[in-house]
Length: 275
Ligand code: DGL
Image 1: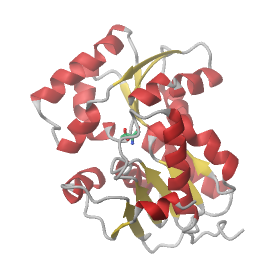
Image 2: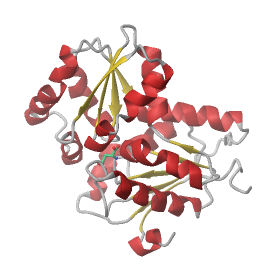
Image 3: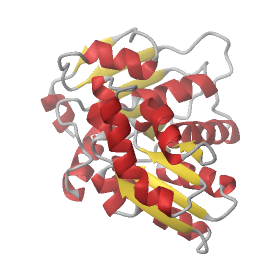
Image 4: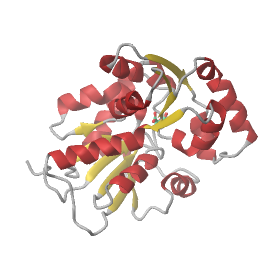
């Protein structure tokens, strides 16, 4: 099995640019690992699409990475993790790690009063992905979930300190505030970009869980446990592939990743569709 090679890259896919927040976390935890990223920018957003469409797209995205000989696939998109992870695991021999279980476990470890809030896209929330994962581990935890779809365009527009973002955050988070949550899962790739305003509105005593960093810790443990962690001291190489290069792509990518992309290539959708 040639994917079980230490020096092979980790594959990460997302519905678009948002998954770069996950790349940033993986880079922090695992700086020696090389990464191949695929962002389905031609078909984003996934968060408002039906489960069957998301599963179809996720299988195509994973297939693109599988062909690149990756040793593990991270499903950075919370929506795809919520809906398509089981299907992906049925098909691929390559280990696949999504956002939901790592985020759920990190929140369970953090909560004291056993009331956890979750925010995400419409699809992640309507599938109750996080509450199912949390209650599978501890059924006594109360989980309060809220879809916050406008956070995605606000993060992409860079309206980080804007009064409109604060107003929208107040509207979205008021239910969660009333429920006395002590832990809040940021269950969407884009939300770490808005974490300051989210923290301010939800209150400083609420612990925010970034599902991307929780997943990075799990990936680290997984690679170590299987003896396929790359310990070489040279810095990992990064390749980014997208199905479209929309206007302002580089500006948004830089905001999400915290630096310029070193290698970017547009892939034709036909190549992706060709499973
Ligand atoms: N990447 C998606 C997620 O984390 C957000 C953007 C979208 O709706 O596609 O759920």
